[in-house]
Length: 145
Ligand SMILES: [Zn+2]
Image 1 (tube, rainbow, N blue to C red):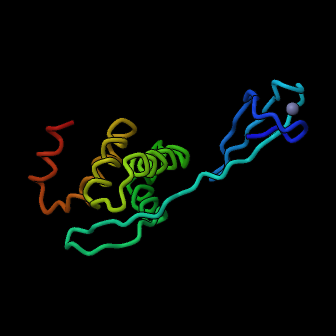
Image 2: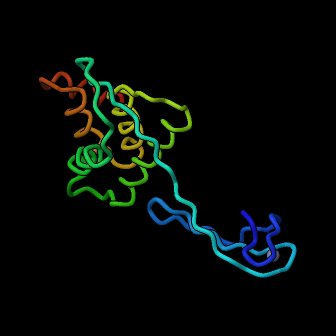
Image 3: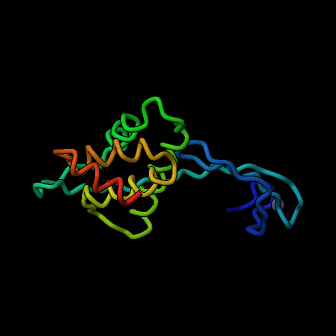
């Protein structure tokens, strides 16, 4: 990142903030001492989700969000908590350089995050995700909490 005044690449970051898909960084040039702001776009690489039947779909964060939000309805889980779960999952996929991810893998990641946040939301999500058919399934899950 070059200084916009003197062109030096030697600078320090004073402050950085995330706004959705953009990171704003306040920088100070170590050469001329002037300050400037840079904006970096966080590039989200699209990936495919492999469904249970083997079909593939483009990953859609809004779908994932809906599913989590439903499980968290009327629970003390904020929009921000949900956003963080999704960000973490997307980041994990990107860091591992995956082009395809099993839906079940994403589901497990959501469950892991919800387990720490709210048990009711966790159970709700698990019942949909694991396709619970009877009380026995719930009982087995309760034993794991
Ligand atoms: Zn400079």
